[in-house]
Amino acid sequence: MTWRLRCRSCGFVGEEGRYYPFCPRCGGAMEFDGEPPRYGRLLGEGNTPLVLRSTRVGHVKFKLEYVNPTGSFKDRGASYSLQLAKDLGYTCVVEDSSGNAGISTAAYAAYLGMRARIIVPATAAPGKIQVIRALGAELITAPTRAEAASMAEAMVSECFYVSHSRSAAFLEGMKSVGLELSQDKEVRGIVVPSASFGLLLGIYYGYHGSPPPIYAAQGVDNPSLAAFVEPTAVGKGSSSRLADGLVLPRAPRAEEAAKAVRSTKGGLILVSDQEIVDAMGELWRMGLMAEPTSAAAFAALSLLAEQGVDVSNYVAVLTGSGLKYAAQLAEIMRG
Image 1 (spheres, rainbow, N blue to C red):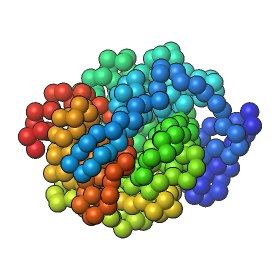
Image 2 (image 1 turned 135 degrees about the vertical axis):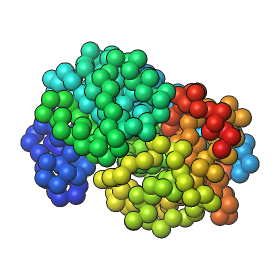
Image 3 (image 1 turned 30 degrees about the horizontal axis):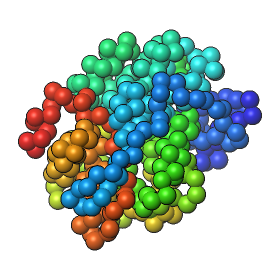
Image 4 (image 1 turned 180 degrees about the vertical axis):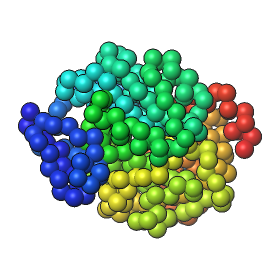
C-alpha cells in the first residue's frame, strides 16, 4: 500500500496503509495522502442521469442520484468504503445515520457478506428504518443524532466505522459525481443539499477543470455553513423539519466546504418547509420523485432565481428517493 491518511485540521499523518475513520488526535475529518486504492462499481452505483426540465424558474438540469441502487447518492461512498473495509480484513461495519447512509451501508454489507450495525436517531423516517431492517442489519436507536454518532464512535475497535461526515473513504467515493457533472460543458452552476458536505466536496474535488459556482442548500434549522458563509438567500418559514437528511449537529468539513463554495463564487441558501413542500410538489409533477431533502436543492435554486440569478442550465442534485416516504407523502404534500 502506498497511501496514508492525514487530517486537514491538525496535520496528523497516519501510518502507511492504516485506516482511521477520523483523526485520532483532534477528531477531525481525514483525507488520503498519496494514491488512494481504486475500486470499481459494485452494485451499479454512479453514472446517474442528468435530465433537463422546463420549470417555473427556467430550464433546469437535475442530477438523479436517487436512481442509485438503494435510492440515494450515499451508495457511492458506501461502495468505496466497504470495499476498502473488506480489503483491510474487517467483517463488521457500523454507521450512524438518519436513514440513507444506513440503508446504503446495510445493503453493501449484505452483498459483501459483512455484518452491519446501523444507529439511527429516534426521528429517523419510519420507511427508512424498515428498509434497514429488511436488509438484515442490526438496528440500534439513539435519542438524538449526536448520541447516534457517539455510540458509533465507541464501536470503532470492533467494526469499520463508515463515518460519512469525516471519512476519507466516503469522500473518495463521492468524487465520481464531480467527474460525471464535468462531462456536461453547459452546466453553469450546481446546487447541492448539504449536511456533512461529503457530496459538495466530492463534486468540487472530482470536477475535471474549473467547477462552476457551487451552492450549498441547508435548512433554516441547521445552517452549519452560516458560521463561515453569509447566506445568499433565506426562505420565508422558520422551520425545516422535513429535510431530515440535513440535520447534523457537527459538520467537521464545514470550513473546508466554505472554502470550496467561496472559490467557485457560489454561496449558501437556507430553505424552510414552506419552500420544500412547494418544490417537492413541482418535482413530482415533473416525474422526479425526490425526497424532501432532495427537494431542498430545487427550493434553494428557486430562491436563487428570486434574487435575479439566471439559473438556466444550473443543476439541482436530487440526492434521495421520495418513495422511501410513501407512508408520509399525503401529509407532506398538504404542508
